[in-house]
Amino acid sequence: VNAYLMKKWMDKDSKVDYDFNRISLEREATACIHCGRCVGHCPMHLMPNYLVAFAKEGQLDKCRQVDILGCVECGSCSYDCPADVPIVQTIRAAKGKILEEIRAQKAALNKSAVVAKEENEDKGDKRVEH
Image (cartoon, rainbow, N blue to C red; front, side, top):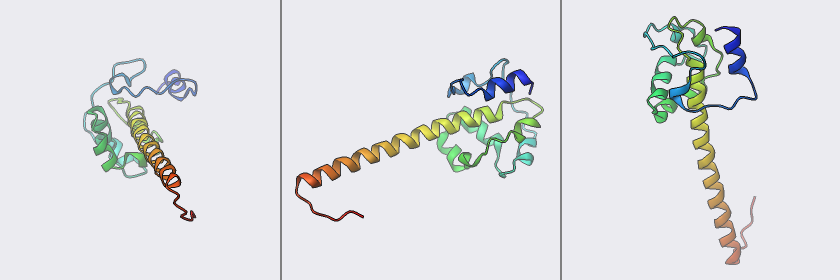
């Protein structure tokens, strides 16, 4: 990875793009050649090749099943990729989408808990909260 692209990827002011079709920054992404080098270099013992494939297909449930959130985004997989696939960027985008879904679910749960609490207060429920 050249320094220009690394700076652009690491730029804190840039917005995260969750569109999997636009992951590459300055070049057309090449296809995975299924060599397995990324798997051998993952310190978390994940399968980056599967994570990228599921992410590009939009199968975020499968990404969660193979523990995409366990990826520490160290870049070991990308460093040794002979096809120069943007592995970390694709994983980061998929994790972003998954985290957005989790936040939305939590917000919905919190909202329903507040509504239920208000309804109980309206009924005069005197339960002790811990």
